[in-house]
Amino acid sequence: MDKTLRARKPKAGIRASEQGMKRPVASAIFRSSRDVEISAKTERVNLGNPDQWRKDVRPKVETPIAKEQVIFQARATRAVEHLLATLDSSVLAEAASASTDTGVLLSALQQPSVLSSLLKQDPLAEAKLRGQTRRKELLEAEGGVMGPEEVGNLLGIQRQSVDKRRKTGTLLALELGNRFVFPAWQIEGNRIVPHLEEVLAALHDHDEWRKLSFFVNGNVRLDGKSPLHALRAGEYEDVLKAARSLGEHGAA
Image 1 (cartoon, one colour):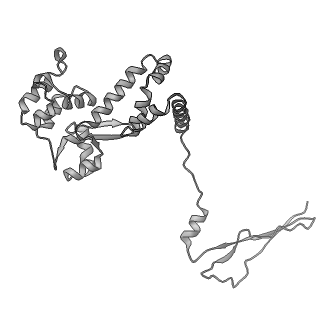
Image 2: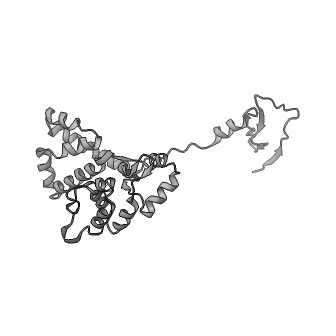
Image 3: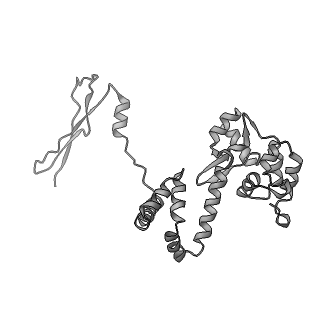
């Protein structure tokens, strides 16, 4: 089939203005023996605000929801619906009075009617719930916890410095999900509790939850006082001995 290609030059005198100008997208006309003509198309380019033009042509990419998030949300919703169908209104009201959202769930899960159902699925469910409840109590003890930014503000240091102290073990931090929290009792005013770093060093063989438990619970080697209270009273040497003996012969 006979084809010819005839180039078309843009017309002279195309004016640019703040409103924009027209430019050829294709600058040719294709003819065939059937005299079919494909004419050039034009588009308007905004010259007054080139940044807006870039935004218009930039592909819009939406952040996809992770598969794990979808699965978790579906199963968590189903679990809550089960609790609502299982518990009566008085028990729900008691659970709802908890001070935190986590406390609401823990209170509901420990109800006898729910717990018996959980034990059928997981014989260790009761022990796991007790462990979670205990961790919650440890985190709330002696003023609760704070984030790294708040710690930095109190101590007058950058967040990077707070992270460095966490990594080197001179500040106690607990990992919760994808973040770290710091027990508030470590800081008095704008300084660290005296001798805290030495005691933490003596506890370096223990995990962070064990360290937290050591500081806020009563200790038989300190006449029932918690190591934290003993530190505040200036009994550093006694606390250090208790820390070094942690785990020996059932020592608290």
